[in-house]
Figure 1 (tube, one colour):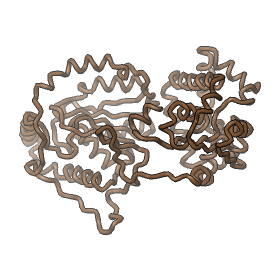
Figure 2 (cartoon, rainbow, N blue to C red):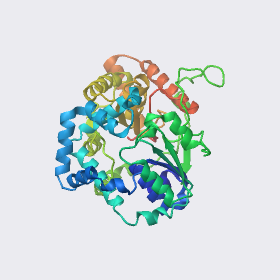
Figure 3 (cartoon, helix red, strand yellow):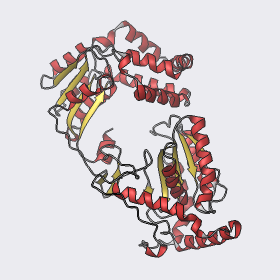
Figure 4 (tube, rainbow, N blue to C red):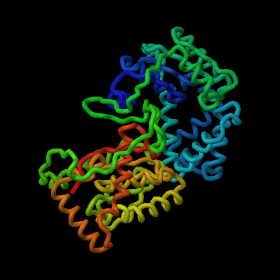
Length: 456
């Protein structure tokens, strides 16, 4: 977590953690005091009398036996199913289950369904987390590290918490009288789910939290777009809040683009050296990579390429727990509108098969196709990831690639008998996306991309 704060956020933060997250928050604030400006602990998991309760020791005994815990958890998940499993879990962590429903309950059920695709990997991750927390709770050095926390700290605790009794929070504040304790009556282990309005008022009262209106954060010379602190987005087809309608620029001709310096083509010859470096990287082997939890991903190849060119990321995604599917493209050379037809069918099939919105991963021209595909089908798409795609200027490509574009145009005219004007709708949608990006608005639920020059 500290690496994320230091390398991605790049500045001191207000850290909030619930349960095990609260325990981790205390360790982080103690070990790196200069990076934590304020600390909010919500029903934190800290040592206390509850650790020595009979039911806690029994659960710890089962989890300590290698292999047994995974079998028990898998069997319970199969017998109960995602819906009953979530309902029973909610009944444990909240005081009044009727307060948790609607979209929040459905989101937890959907996440549980996705995790079930992982099989034994799901139960293994859970037992590893529980064992790790158990070892941390038994560490006699915890209280000494807790005393090193320098940040102003607020402890918020549910009065009826069954997992971490409120007496534990009182003992924690007794050891640190400079910390503030707020007890929310009538709620359990997750007050932010039971009474979100009361929780927000308590946790932010007297705390000045600055927001950053610009979602682009600059750190170490690179622009980073993060989900945290992003400004609200506005659909492309809505009026401008400042007054007047949003105007979308028409597609510009290739001659109007400002082109970057042309890189030497021989650099593409490093592909085999780069591949050898890739297979030796710990990330390629899945080391410390968050599990995909069965999330669906549709892969779209680049210009003059086919599905076979994305075999490496396909295998990697499947290995770390995603459900990848190729776009069914043999040769990415036809008109964009022609290319979108089978991709829409593949997107709809993957959505029906998994029950979850799909992440689109496109390379080169495939990234441009993915952006327009998400623009036209926002209800099917979770996010867009592009690799080396000319999103800002479709014709800002290497001269050799541009020669291939002209050859492809001649092929399409010969095969379909349509002039290039058939692409006007596609270019218009792409121009609308560029205008949206300038106005900080979006059509798709989430769209993240890494722009660049298209690969040949």
